[in-house]
Image 1 (cartoon, rainbow, N blue to C red):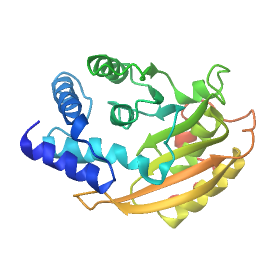
Image 2: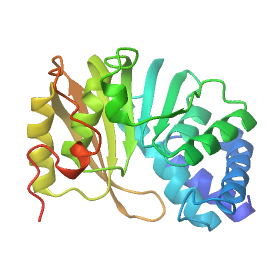
Image 3: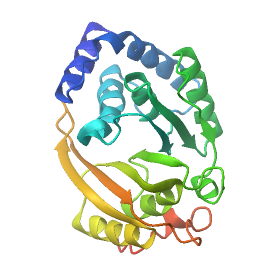
Image 4: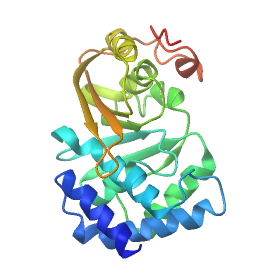
Length: 244
């Protein structure tokens, strides 16, 4: 990582109330691993250091806003891709037990290699469909938190994540700008699968100023057995979603 990249990392962390100086070397190693891996397979569309530092590393850490990931806990990263937000979270919150999940085996293989190279014993990647995990007794209602970053519409995320959460658990969904229509549909979908929206935190991504929204949904009741629906359906036909 160049001095400019490190300065951006520290600046972004400071804006989030995080002192990343002791983690800068680990983030530099993650940057090198990601750039090397992306040269061999399609891990991410972002290739430049500035974009990776701000739009992957700092953006991943914005899910720490509001304190929903403080303390210990079992956390599933839904649709982790190349390991975001799971890997940055693991670097700054070693007390979390993280399960990054993605349906693309090559991406999960990269996350596994990166976690091992970084010495992250609190990361256990898994190649699977989330709909399948939501019906698996080993995973259903087995997590304290589910985090997800720019994966699907809010109604789809509610259906996919809530079955995985224990009662009282939280879905922490990282979104861009959020329309009133998506928020309303997300609220109705959450209620259908046993949840309720607790906070909607609109803010600007540090340094870049891009619009972001952090939506926190609490699981307040058991999810009906019929959810999640079969593979692909929650994303193709989200509950109550009337997007145009």
